[in-house]
Image (cartoon, rainbow, N blue to C red; front, side, top):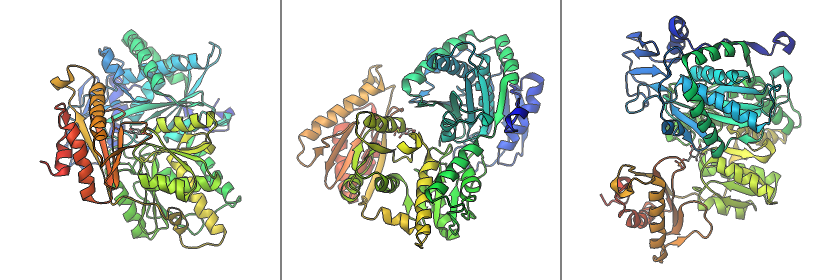
Length: 614
Ligand SMILES: O=P(O)(O)OC[C@H]1O[C@H](O)[C@H](O)[C@@H](O)[C@@H]1O
């Protein structure tokens, strides 16, 4: 089969669970390769099913607080460990699955084990067969990719066993980006075994090294909350039926049907083609530009060598391109201050025209201009809105709820578009963009301050790399029209954006064990806090509730605004405040404190400290 497919399929890969005797040989080298610290101690097996690294290493990373790392390791050769139904269902994190896959962090026991992943693979298979109304003769195909996390390969193999055991064709891509995985459901190229009927990305975005998780796609987009719940419910039932024997059998079957393809070549050449096309089919439209990339040791390192260089850009000074699941340099997260500082410094030191930074799985990004000015959060949205509104005058820009008032003014007054400030959550924002179009309101961009963003022209694919492609197009067309000045053309696009002098996000935790919750859900408690705040605001003449608001309580006053809302996933009430001075922000903080101080189940010390009341 591989030969008949023009050599694009690398090999049929052996999906081993590395159990018993073979486990030591298979597992240890992988782990050793993954750990960037010097091993002064020894690698030791502490049981049949787990390897423990007893290494006296110096932590090079804030995440690592313990010296023992267990890579998730419940083996198919041992008894299948009991997992409570509610614990299984708790792996849902909005429209993703997330859990702890590596042991060694206090208070965070492993809950995303190999058998759990295998059950999830089998459950996704059952869900997909039902969704696609496939009959037994149709062998649905599922692609699997992963980011740089140290638990990636074990989870990839486990989930492959679940899929293959259910009779599906499994195609592993290895290191890949989340958007590439979705893209594989749209690509039509049998040489690369595409399109995939379903796709799975193994990632936990920017979370610490010990976490991991799954995102699922079909050609209709990312799966939503209800689908994930359905899959987890199916997985619980399947898991309960697992026996030692069934797990061993699925391993054998998987080894026969799992294939491997270098799909990132397809995805990256699509990005290259997009820039060339926008530049009027010029082979090297970025010739003369110096662009540095910071992949934070996640999966985005490909962007330098496989996208920028073929387009003619110089990429020297790019950093942290090598995948390293311990993220030894900084958190791969464009919202993180240290990460932004790192790419800004790289731009300035290298006198580059532009800097580009990605999160771990490349569905989020940000940029930095040649003067070190950051295009992240509101500024990235303003920039993308300016580009999209040039192409689609008057279009609606959908954003998340924590965007600034200045952004609305910029989009509506300067750019002539419409700002639809919706809810937090990339899936919410993208689905809203799609919904607006379906009811006749044209929208071409749905984007979050987190750096998630999707364009209608790109199948509403949540793709950090594609956002950067839109910026590259701007640079290339400026060069083609003879303009000089590096990234000035991009910087000029957000001229006039008013930015708050002061912005802060405080996260007020709900103590789920507090007697005030009376054993109820934290959401109900959080809603009660929000209702109380809303009532108090109504009687304060300095404050005005936002007339249109889709999430939490957003209030204007003292020349600024605040938003208190429930977190999408956590027992937390995030509070965002923006104002023109610290003093005004404190006044807004006081208004919130007056409402929340009566709720003993809420941890308000950060807010008290902020307003100087403690
Ligand atoms: O509601 P929060 O806890 O602030 O989290 C909100 C964020 O959650 C995840 O990280 C999603 O990927 C983001 O799209 C979303 O913005």
